[in-house]
Length: 256
Image (cartoon, rainbow, N blue to C red; front, side, top):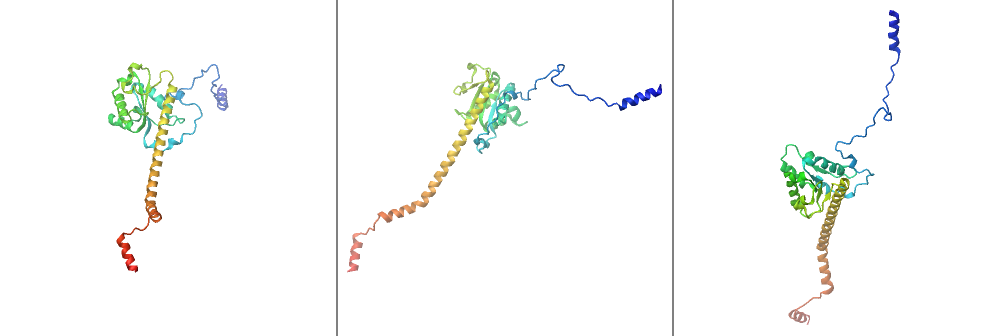
């Protein structure tokens, strides 16, 4: 009896344990789960096409003179929609730099200073105008700061979501707004193109200004060096010595 127990115990030690292979996702007994969305929830809205090379003006020092390409002004209640927009624009296919208050503002800093600096250090400003936006005092503060920085300019991009035209801010009545209620991705694409157009125009204006300054400086230098030669040449070719009548008489008397 004892020997049979011992032999059975040794047999169990010598037998190799079976390897466990997890069931494949194709098994009917294991439900297949769809891939979970990203943390920001905007992976489905990111551009899916092969990204084109970035435009050359995006590497200009004029663009990098500001910290952000776009300041997204939104109510804290609408943070999810603001993250969708920022994630779309910050995707490598777009490559823009966005400011979000709850993400990029310095912790412990004065809110007025933080928001004012965000507006001043951004090329463009997008207002996510919702009923919550109209009730948020800080949203109104940032909107008026942007209007004072660039009144009647294409740097301001109003975005409307779940808002009737009668609720649209009177300060922005002269600006064309983009409606995100029906097709958010189309609205995000329009925002991207608007920011790119502004950056491109800004870089071209700066390049034209630099060229103009260089031309004017070159012309001044050439004028300063050529003016005496032109004057001397003119005197030599067209001027004749002029003598008064008394000098002519004295010269004739000396010769006689």
